[in-house]
Image (cartoon, rainbow, N blue to C red; front, top):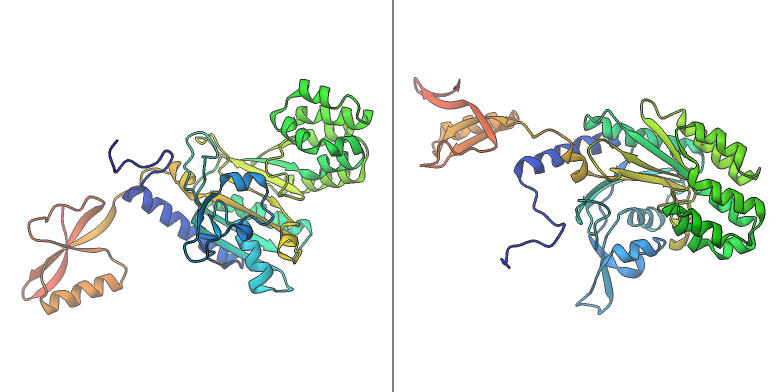
Length: 383
């Protein structure tokens, strides 16, 4: 095996792709700033107890672990930045007011999240802390759709769910509550035969509702069907009202409802969503409300947010066009250096050709040149 072969689902990012990712990162972060989000930069690794606080078992399985040579304690390489940002809000900022935070950086997964997915996503996201109302959820939904629009993604499917439906059912049946973990798994796989078997001794209304959930998937009319089929419980009514509210604010996105999609169930506390776009088999963005994560840090704060993978998103964008640039000869002559610095100060790309390599500018289209004419350096168009 060649010693330069990279691990499975780990890959280098080459110049044209890297430029797409970086330009997208900049424009998305700039847009976050327009909404009032403040940038934070959590560490790439930290002690495992802190990193996985409130994150759930699935995050534990996705996290690479190693021993700190200084302290002897177990550390983890972050697989997600959301809990880190929640820790920053709870402990370092400690504000009583609404706080909007955003972030961007690499994360590392022990296994890919989906087909052809990288194990080293570049995660970018935004979180709102301190407001329990749907207004915060609506802003996050608007922001994720705006982020995709900045990448010129026009066809978007917003897949909504709400953990309140499932939890309201469990609260009304002690036996169902004891089977919560198994029910969560079976609903996620939509395994109706197994659901029928495990629920045979449940409250009849709860059992019927659990068997209905896997089929409550489709367009926004599912909300109407759910009101008809599910028990008249306050928790379910509230969840459906909140979904209906957010559907109306989804703009041009194609909205689907899946009341049995509980990815992130143990982490989220309200509305959850996944965003899909043509050309990618996996969700390009995920998010929702997670009010209880802050409790693990000793300070409960209402919270909602989203994250998306810039590497996945960049795959959908066209090959980056070669950038216009200026070619200049290699020389330390003072007047040439002044001219080059002026051009670079104005935002121009100026490449000084090293001797013998005048035509090797792979990523750039050098359509202009700095040339010496009549005793001065001038800019000239070239073919």
